[in-house]
Each structure stands twice: as C-alpha cells, then as structure tokens.
Image 1: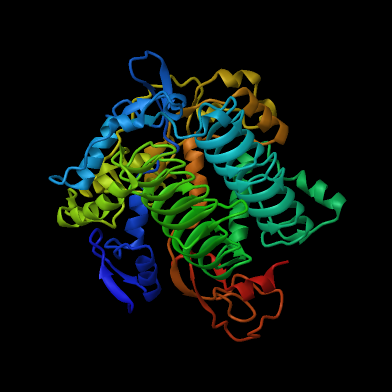
Image 2 (image 1 turned 180 degrees about the horizontal axis):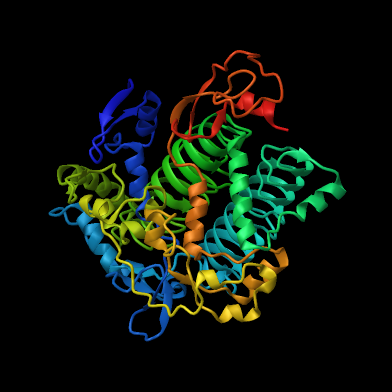
Length: 602
C-alpha cells in the first residue's frame, strides 16, 4: 500500500504509516495501528514498573515483603519463588471465553484472579540482592533494576556485568565506576558519559580508548588530557591536585565548569557505531533500523527501544520496548526477550513463540490472552485446548474483538491489533517508566483517564540535614551510616516535576557505600537515590527526533563558539548535511553531522 497519513485516536495528532510499514503488518497479519508511535510507546511503558518498591504482606502471612505492588493493588500477589514453582496451578484460574463481553474485560477479570509474583526477577540466580527488580544474576547488589550479571553494585539501572559500581545507568562491563551514563568496558571512571574502553577518567564525555583524562570531550586513544589540553604525566597529576574532588563545594564548581566547557564543543547528531541505514540514538551494530533508541544488533525494525544483545539481537520487529536478546517478529510488546518469536501485544514473556495478549508466560507457545503460564501451549484465558480447538477458536475471538471492542474512559476504541488498554495497567502513571520519559502532572494524568499513585507517607525522622554533612569526604565519620539524611531536593528549587514525584525525601549511607566514597575520594551525595537517578536520566536525550541541519559553518560552528581544528570536506562553505536527531532545534549544543564531527575528534 502507498504511504498514508492517519490521525491518532488518542492525541489527535497526525502520523504517517509508510508503505514498508504496511508490508510488515501484512506479514504478521495485524491491522495498521490507530495510535501514533509516541502514544503506542507510552502505552507500553505504562505497564513497566521496575523501580518503585513497597513493603506489603502477601496472602495470609504477617511477613512483610519488598514488592513492586503496593498494598492497595487489588491483585493476588504471591512470593515469586512460589510463583515460579509448581505449587500454583495457573490453569486453575481459567475461564471459558465469553462472547457476551469484550475480550479486555475478560482479561481484566483474569488479572484480578491469577497469581502475580511480588517481584519480576530470576530469583534463583540472586545472591544477597533482595531490593532489586527486573534482574538476574546479581550478587551483593542493592536497588539495582533492569539489570543482569553484576556484583557489589548499588543504585543502578539497565546495567550488565558491573563490579563495585554505584549510580550507573545503561552501562556494561565496568568496574569501580561511579555516576556513569553509557559506559562500556571502563575502569575507575567517575562522572563520565558515553565512554568506552577507558580507565581513570573524571568528568569525561564521548571518549574512547583513553586513560587519565579530566574534563575532556571527544577524545580517542588519548592520555593525560585536562579540558582537552595535553600535559606530561608529571604535569597531569600535579595539575589534578588543583581539583579538590573530596570537597562537595569544590565538586559543584568543577561540575559547572565542565558543563560549560562541554557546551563549547560539538556533539555528533547521534550516538552509535558500526551501523548501516539507521535512524535514532544510541544504536550499535544495527542495519535498516528506524526510530530506534538504545539498541544493539537490530535489523529490519522500527520504533524499538532499549533492546540488548548477547550473540543474537532483534530482527523484523516493530514497536518493541525492552529487551531483545534473540527476538524475531515482535510487535507491540514490552519486557520480552531471550529467544522469542512471533509475539504480539504481550508483556514480560521469555523464551516463547506465537503469543498474543499474554502477560508473564514463559517457555510457552501458541497462547492467547493468558497470564503466568509456563511450558504450555494451546491455551486461551488460561484454559487448555486441543490444537484443533485452539486454531478454530482464535479467528472467532479476533472477529469478536472487532465487533465488540473495549472502549476506555477517554473514548479510545480497542479492537484486535491494539496493545492492552492503558487503564488496565496494574500501576499508576507515576509508578511506571512512562513517567520517566514523558512526565505528566497529576491533573494531566487524571484528565487522560489514567491512574495516579499518591505518595505514601514516609514520616522519616531526619537526623542529619544536608547542610550539616561534612564538606570533605576525609572528614566524614563512620557514624554517618547511622544517620537518616534529608534529601536536598526539598531545600532547593532546581529540580522539576519528575523529581518531585519520586523523591524519597531522605536516605541513608550504607557502610560499604561509605567505604566506596572514601576509596574513590569523592564527596557524599546530597540527593536521595531516586533524585540522583532522575538527574542522570535528564542527561540523556529524549526518545524523539527533530530535523536539523549540521551546525558546522566552515571554519567554525554556526554560533561561532567552536573553532574547527581541521579542514572539512566542505572546506570554508557551510555544511549542507541534514539529519534527524534527538537534539531539538531550541537546544544550545553544537550539533555536527557525522563527517564534521569525525573531523574534530582528537
């Protein structure tokens, strides 16, 4: 079919369905979407709560568990080790399909009956890491989320293979790193962003193969640089003494100086390498991937986010959010991965094939509208059918979904081909990943007909004000681990709606955490872990694209702030390259095309 422009039934904005999109929808036998790509993404993210944990009782036990479901959630929550065992017969929750009511109403009823695990993790691979969710293979970790195979790591999100690290996001194979964003194979790197194969960097950005550098940007295979200026080894370490990172006051001044210096240097329009015909940001080893963000080894796919890879990545998939690792023919799914194929409109499924509208079904195939099944096939609403019965009933159910659709509070119509209605999500908007990337006020959420989770009263008895923390890490006593420290967010006004929503108001410094700060000679944080996480997320660009022109004007940048260090292919003329980028036109960064950027990399 030819390209078509449609109006999103949710936000009422126009969006385009390309001819290649229609070919994909025809291939997997689904109707074209009626929501725009952004509304589809938000709808999936509304089902993901990895970071918000609560203390709650489970069943008739008086024992309190740390759970992703607060006590006011009306679900049948069970301990995850029981959920994964054979103690619970998930087929016992089954019902016959009822053609007198909409499919999604029946699914909602099944969600209220069926057992859900208190945390979504591979609990058998966890060692001393109870306060973690959406994880596997962790040892001695605390408040780590959406992560795998890490040890002695704290306050981190979407990381793999870390050891002795704190406050990291979207990083892999790092050791003794702190406050890092998109670090890969790094050692002793502090306050760095998008660095790879590097060691002992401090306040560096976009550096690869570097060591012993400070406050530098866009370096390759360099050593002993401070603010992009080369020093001898002796000069470097002598100069480094001028930056007193032990002091929080000095640290804040250095941080501001580094930020201003980075703004004077060009950025590449997108982060990525070893790609062919891609569009998006943070893309690696991918081919023919459009509107893709934070993904590796993605081919022939579109509208994908946060997809990882080991040996295998993701192929032939649309509208797929978290987490890849051997995925093919996936459409409108979230938190699915590890050798999956032909999954549609599903959430949290591993090692499965041919699933539609399934939640928490693992190592299964040929399921429709099921919850929590493992090693099963030919089931509908958790009821077992023969192969012949299943294949006969599925077309009738899809036809029924079209003739009796679900209509949400906002008036959106959900026929076959739409992901789960947002209002059926187990979580409030501000509990989910949607709030992190598309923050809304309580009023905006309620106007959209969605749930809002009121903050639970914490009533922490603050024993130490932020301003009373010793400025220098060398002056911090070991007894600080007994204090309840006030988060600095309530004092200042520099943080926005997103931080206000999730601020935990107070925090503690754990003994092994204090040991880390002293070992690395860095000051104690003044923000709680939630606010620190929000600060890191804000440093990553949004999941949106804007059309822009290269900011290289020949010998210097458009704004005349940066002077080029080499001759470019367009010589003294303005670069004519155009691109789509996650840097909006109103931002102040100097944004270059790939050719101009590569000419300036030192």
